[in-house]
Image (cartoon, rainbow, N blue to C red; front, side, top):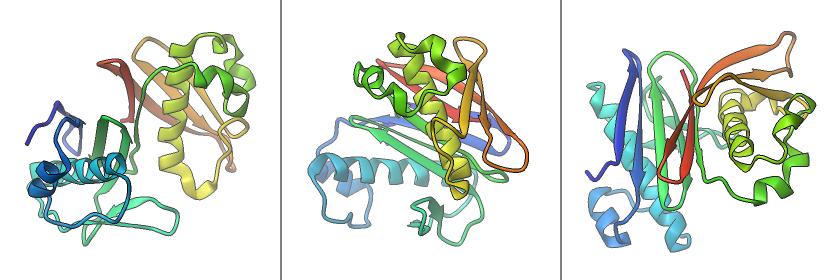
Length: 200
């Protein structure tokens, strides 16, 4: 399997990243389930993320039986309680598994579009980063991770979440839409010209 990276985070969690270079036929040969009708790039992302999840599930000695989506859109394993999260930004795809806790992962490339839409996701406490596309990208992917974990609360990216960046590679994500603040430790890593963020 042409993985770019697989990383074990602890005894119950791992993530994996794939740089998609395969043709649709090559991906279809690796994953037997037929994807839904969609444009070629989306189909490649669909196949790659499922191949990643299958790889992570089997790496923990479990049997992969497929993925279904809840009404919220959250992906879940069929007949397995382990938590998963997937992300893609062509040609990159990534997935994470946690056997015991909710988890999230997101990948994105720093781009000027984030400066244009910063008013939609930048909390007042994060305004110091408004001109830095790299920091904006880190905040965006961290909030995507938070949403994947706390999506049932329907948090607003701007008003209900904040990201506290502690270093180049570590941040705390805070969700404020509950009776008390909920905090998650997030790791940020560069990979090619992308950033990836995930929960630990």
